[in-house]
Image (cartoon, rainbow, N blue to C red; front, side):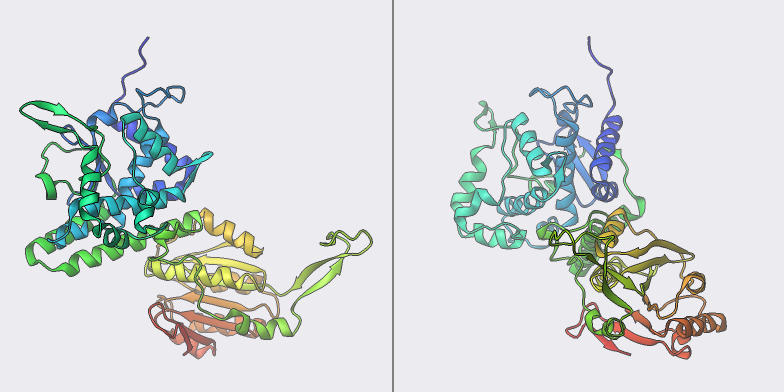
Amino acid sequence: MRGPVRDEREIVEAVLAYLAATNPALAAFLQNFAIAKSRSAKTAYFDAKRAAIVVPEKWLRKVSLDNYRTNKGYITKGEFAALLLHEMFHGSLNHWVPLIDKKDLNPIIWNIASDVEVNSILEDLPVEDSTFWDFLVKFGERLGGTPVSWRTFRDKGVKKDDPAEIVYAKLLEYGNEIKLFAEADVEICDEEGCRGGSSYDWRKSIVMPDLIEGKSDDVKEIFKGNKEFREMFKESMKRYESERDPSALEELGKEVTTRLAATMLKLAGNLPGSLKRFVKPYKHQMKWEQILKGIIARGSVKDYRTWSVPNRRGLKYVPGYSKRGAKVWFLVDVSGSISDEELSAFVGELVHAAKYSKINLVIWDAEPKLLSVGASRSRILSVIRRGIEGGGGTVISEALELVKNNLKPNEPVIILTDGYWYDDDEDTVRLMKEIKRISGNVLLVTTAITPQAAKEAGWRSIRLRLDDSKPWQEV
C-alpha cells in the first residue's frame, strides 16, 4: 500500500525540522534563504539573484520522510539536509561573486574548488553518529555520483581547510587534467542520444548555472526564507548591475559571512576550520590576567583545601582543592546596535576571562537577563552554545539596578558595550557611582565611545579595537 503523497513544502519543512533538532544553529541560518525547485536543473545550485537554493524537482520527489526507507530509490532527510547545507555554504561563503565579477575565471575549476571548501566544512559538522559529509556521500551514491573533497586532489597539494581561492590556484596549474576529470562523469546528449557518465554531476554548474549555461526560467519557490535577508541580496545585485560597482558585492559578501560565522559561534560553539578566516572563535584581545591580577593577588579569588572535593591525585586521606572569593560580574550589551562581529568579540573576552574567575553573566538590551551565577569556564561555554539573544533597545539602568541589588563587596563589575545607550543621564551616573563604591573594581570595555555617565562616575574605560594592530588601549 502506497504512503500518503506529500507536497514539496511539507517535505522541505520536515527536513528543516530534522535539521533544527540536530543542529539548531545551521537550521536557523539556512532558513534565511529561499528554497526552490526546478524541472530543468540537472543539479542543485545557489542562485544569488534570488538568494535561493535551487534543487532539481526529481531529487525532491525522492526524499523520504520515513526513516525505514533506506533503499537506493529514496533520499533520507539527513542526506537532503546535507545537500541544502552544501548549497547554503556556497551562498554564504560568496562562491558566486567571482563568477559575476571575474570574467577570466575558469567556471568549472572554480566550482570544483568551491565544492572542496564546502565539503571540508561538512566534514567538521557532526550529525547523529556521523557527519554531514558522510550523509552527502550517501546522497551521491544513491544518485550515481561521488562528491569531491580535498582528498580528491591531495596529490595536487590541496590541504584540509584550504579556502576555495587557494584550491582554485592549485588546480589551475593542472588545467587540462582537471578539465578531463570534470567531464568524465558528465552525461553528453546530442542528436544521437545520451551516452556516458551520470546525470548526477557534482563538478559543473554548482553555483549560478545561468551565468555559464543560460538562465533557467522554471524555478518555483517552495520556502520563502527571511524577507529582510533576501532583500539585502537583491538590492546589492541591483546596485552592482546598475552601477557596476564591485563594492556592492564585497559589502554583501562580508555581511553574509559575518552573519554565518557569528550565528554558528553563538549557537554551536567552535567553528569549522574554513570559517575561522571570517570570525575567529573565542579570539580574546584583552589581557585579563593583568586586568584581574590585582583581584587575585588580594586573595579575593584563591584555592583552599576542603574534604568536600576529592583529591585530584586520588590520595585517600588528603583533602582536595576548591576556589572561593569574589565573582566577576559581566554585563554584555546585546542590543540592536551591536554587530555580530562585536558580539563575537565580547564572547571571546568573556570565555577567556572565565579562566581566571567565576562569572556572573548578565545580558541586556531594553531589559536585563541574568543568565548564569558563579559560572566556570565550561559553564559559560555551555551558556553561549545555547544561544545569546537580543537585538532590542539599549537601556543600561535596569541592568545596573539588577547588579547593584545583588552585588557583594569587592566583586568586580565589567561592562562590554559599544557605548551607545539611551539613558546616559543622572540616574545612570548615580547607579554607576553606587556600584563603584560597593565593588571597588569597575571597568567599561567599549568598541566605540565612552558614555558620559561612565566618565562622570569615574569608571576605568578601555577601548577594544576590532580591526587594529593594537587591539585595546586605555581611554
